[in-house]
Image 1 (cartoon, rainbow, N blue to C red):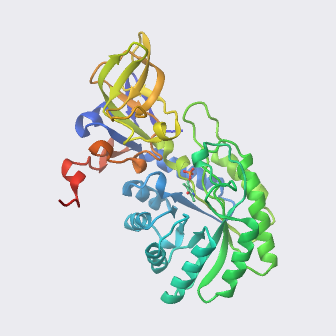
Image 2 (image 1 turned 135 degrees about the vertical axis):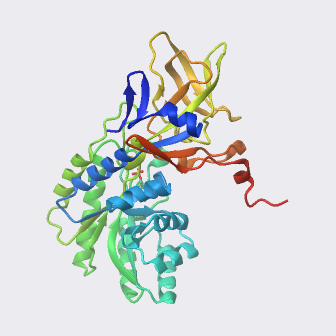
Image 3 (image 1 turned 90 degrees about the vertical axis):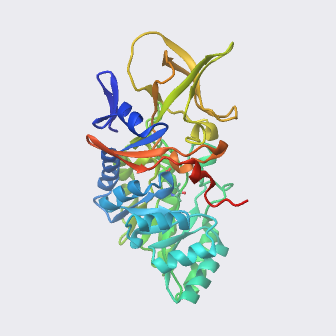
Length: 415
Ligand SMILES: *Cc1c(COP(=O)(O)O)cnc(C)c1O
């Protein structure tokens, strides 16, 4: 559910015609709907209202300060995977007591920074990392909460690049080995406080069963650890709930919530943590781009836009589908075309083999569901300035990130 739609002939973000934003801010531009962000957070929050829980929005899906601030205002916590994301979250006013830190390669500096800020806990992904945290916490004389991220060996049935809970993936620690790490942590109670069990099995998951499989395995681990006297107070089920890009029918957060609550009945004094990213921001954003040229090849038609794979990497990276809509609805003949960017790579496409109305230079296209892993994955490849970002609220909008300039491109460079 989102607030982007045609009103009459024109495409709107909430109460603002996207053509107005293009005129005033230029293209390409990411447009986010504030109301959609709120709605998604509340759907998640409500799904777990009956049990102690913390929603930790996964910052990497969209790390714009205004997006983070929107969730701060809702009372959200945050899942971070780098020192840079911690910096962003704190800048936007996040409560460190609701921040969890995931990732297989936390550096010493990042660990120290997070301990000093007093985050809720580290999601530890290897035995060596645990020893590093132990050492740094000892040096800083700050007792630090940890969860072990276990790899439950569950197939999330999603794209291989975003499946993270299989034995062959680099993430987490296998369950049996994880038990040893909890016992290690218990030996250093001066520095470490093992309070959580964590897992995150992948992204764009559109069925409930992989979540439930992972939950059953981690739930057993919570019991086992508690039996051994390790006071596990938090179970973190990660993120990964999918969204509709094309025809997918992912479970609504409320169904996900019901299933999780059912499966965790009987575990007392347990706070659930969730780390949704895509489900919170994916459908709350679009990428607005202008047609530069149209070109008829002998085998294919091409629509060349001013947005490219550096703005939205998902189609090139994962072969992902994003719906594309013209900002002006029109009847008439449709044409099958590839929508491509100006970058010098044949992998630079936003869509392939799409039926689109006849388009002309200057027309605007909306690339739908671009709020997650859109701008946050963008780059300056081909020395392209990164797009502007805009937040719409009702009938008004603000620029929440200025379009980059050529000066921005060379910042920090020396010859
Ligand atoms: C990326 C990530 C998430 C968010 O995943 P979504 O599929 O966007 O919900 C949550 N937790 C961890 C550890 C992640 O790496």
